[in-house]
Length: 155
Image (cartoon, rainbow, N blue to C red; front, side, top):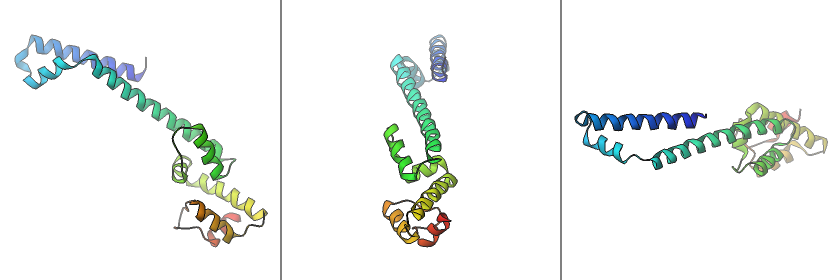
């Protein structure tokens, strides 16, 4: 039995117990409480169960997306990782989402691999900075990429 089912089962038992207590001892509860307990129905449990199920699914999807992002960033460029994640998962991912999922160190490592590849293809640090700025790739320290920051990543 899942946590959601356990929680709903306990809530049902609590409402049933409250119904019995308010029926047997009506003077121990206020009128609003008696009305709330009398009007409580299965639809409310179903709605609560649905909300809990949706939360659990969202949490599982987030965990799966984070795990997949960590796998992808190890061997792919940042943009390729984002593209793959956006193909595989319904929630759109941007640069900041990716950094949140994989952490700054893995993000910087992926940029370093990309910078080294660009250097091998005779792309200068200035050109790379311009490319990354136009693509909107966030830096981890400054506002915009510059030749010095890219040169550090190029090694």
